[in-house]
Image 1: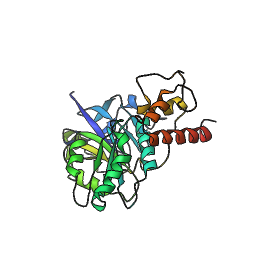
Image 2: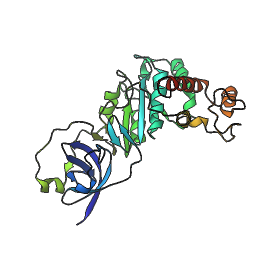
Image 3: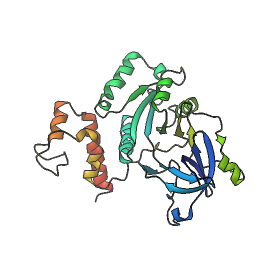
Image 4: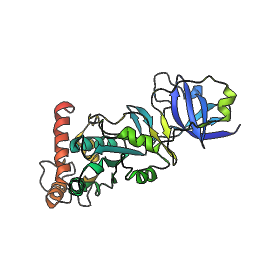
Length: 293
């Protein structure tokens, strides 16, 4: 029997819908891969191997996995805000970035509605987000209303699995409608052989992009919840700019009150954003009060 590799785009009542080379197959999970006490045996986003009989025989190792929604192997989290109406919430942006790093997903920042602000106001936003360069986080200014910057986003997320996060009213639905492919994928031979009835699509679904790749049609990362960080060491690891060439005097430095702290020195020198450092301090106090006591 020959085997096919594909990505799970939807799961409905025990059936897995897998896309491979533009064809969609209806599959079932092999008994040996099932564990009754686990919801993550095989989930949306998984890269799987299945036979002509539609039985999934292997699930590849995941690069990441999130629980709300339950999905794996996300390449990008597009953190989308609007320049105005609603006003850009820098604190929420940083919380979404914290979640992105926690789940090992590359963040991308998109600012919509640039057609509603002046050049000076856009320059102010760029200045306040200057720290993104040090984090190797790409920044896009777009207008879904005037179709500004949309092609650049399409090229960027091509052939990737991308989730969109951000508050309501910032145009996420508009950009998703502009980048996704609404045409139904062709049903593959395996699905026809199984002669299954059609199921209604529910839950988390990967939608095909016009240029290749997928987006997730779920609110997902839109909350303002901090990720479940268990220690100060783990929190520090979620701030990539704190990884410096020179070491602090103390190996267990948490970059708050210790002497000869290279991170604090970098903040004073301006090479680490003070806004980001202040956000770190707020996170530290929140976790210390609510989770680490």
